[in-house]
Image (cartoon, rainbow, N blue to C red; front, side, top):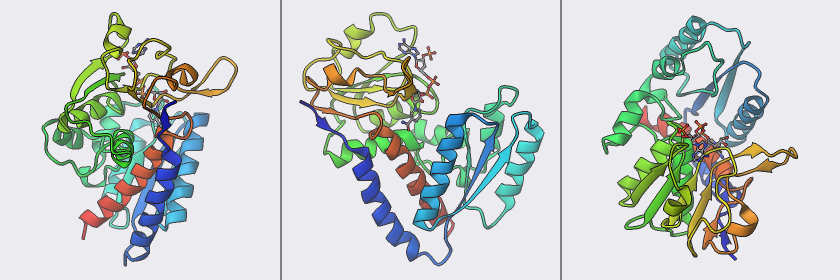
Length: 278
Ligand code: NAP
């Protein structure tokens, strides 16, 4: 049976250390979150982020907009937050309503306040092997989890399923920067299981059940980023945990694996951005 990569436990350890650090900061970090629309998952995620921030002593501000808010209005608010000395980190909760241009909105955030690391400036730094202000939260959380369990990416074959700007591409690049050999798969990949069978580390970020029995070699490290409700309404990941955990060496549960690490990274990034300003 695989060892469980316990994201909840590591999140609590990170929070304990962060709390001590934040208590000693004369000026506390301040996180502003913009939420446009009323997507139920987004509302839960934003509330959770606010709760965690407050628990750690980070000032937090949530700006709510109705789903029909104009792009101009959100851009104006971001400018205001960029110019506000008291705000050290800005996050725009995704997805945005369809009529809003995501790239324009994300790139309006000042790179030194871009807590998700998703501006072209910060992702450009990541992809050119330079240091961004901060790394995107979910990929950073995955690397922290691998490090915690002493799983070294160097020389390993890492297969990443999913190529979003949010998860797939940055995690692939971060693994490449750590000297893994990386293969990326997506919806047009042919013979997915021929590729996954060669993985030492598998990262799945799809949002559908795509990794089942007999798709991996023995002792693969399995990171399941996906989170969605299955046909019965139960929270599920991309990986068939029951069968895959019998042959994997390590595996993340859903929930309790990558999700808590994303929020831990968000809090780490918020503090890092505040420290940059000193
Ligand atoms: P996304 O933007 O929808 O990207 C999904 C990716 O999966 C795309 O690249 C798509 O390929 C690929 N794909 C779709 N069907 C496939 C298939 N049958 N076989 C192989 N690849 C396939 O999603 P995302 O934002 O990266 O999120 C992915 C999942 O992770 C979602 O469930 C999301 O809720 C979850 N998530 C979790 C956390 C967390 O903290 N736990 C954080 C972020 C996201 P194409 O590019 O060809 O369309």
